[in-house]
Image 1: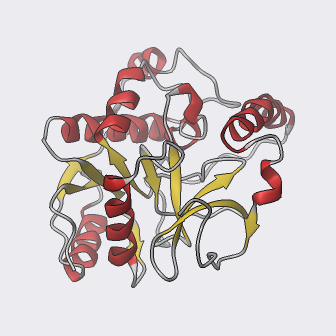
Image 2 (image 1 turned 30 degrees about the vertical axis):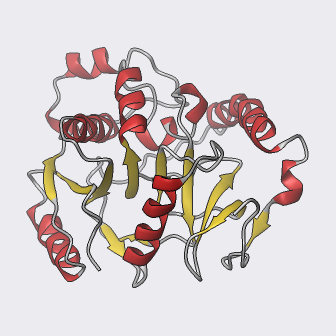
Length: 267
C-alpha cells in the first residue's frame, strides 16, 4: 500500500543533520513512500536583528529560542512549497518520525473519509498523527483499531507528523505575521487561524529517541507563574471552543484510553 496520489510527503531536515535524513529515507523506503526533502531553517544561523523582527508579536510565557523560530519558519516554508503544487494533501514530517505498522492503512482511511466528508465537525484542515492526550472526543471510525478524534482540551503538542489540506495550509500561511509562539503551541489555538485540527487515535507516528535539533534541552525556570498565567489565559478560549462545537456538557462525551469505540457518533 503506497501513499495516495493526491497526497505529497515532505520531510523537514536541517543541512547539519544528514544522519537523521538517512534514517528517514530508510523508514519511508520501507513504506514505499516517495518524499521531497525541505531544508529547514536553522535558527542558530539567523541574525539577532532577524530574530527580533520575527518575534515582535510575542505571546508565549518565555522568550523564544532561535531553534523554535527556525522550526516555525521551516514549516511555513514547507506549506508554501505545497501550495505551489496541485496536490490536495500534504503529509508533513519532521526527520525523527517513526511509523507504526498500521500507519498507511489508518492514513489512507483518514484521507478517503476527508474527501467524502460533508459534516463541518469532521472536515479537518490539519490531521495530527502523533502524541496522544488522555481525553478525546470520538468523531468517526477509520479502521478496526483507529478513529478520528478531537483531543481535549487542547491540540497535542509537537509537529512530528501531520497532514494538511490546501485550505488549512492557505489559512495558516495567510495568517503568518511573525513567530508569536513555538509552532506547536500556536496550533493549540486553532480558533486564531480558523483551523479545524483533529487527530488519528491511537497515534500512528512517534518521535525517534534522538536529541532535538532545537537548541538542545529546554532551559528550566524556577518561577512557575509565567507559565501558569499563560495557561490560565488559554483556559476560557479552549472551553468556549469545545462548547461551541459539542455543547456545554461536552466533557460528558469524552473518552479515555487507547481503544476506539466500534462506531463513532454520526459515523
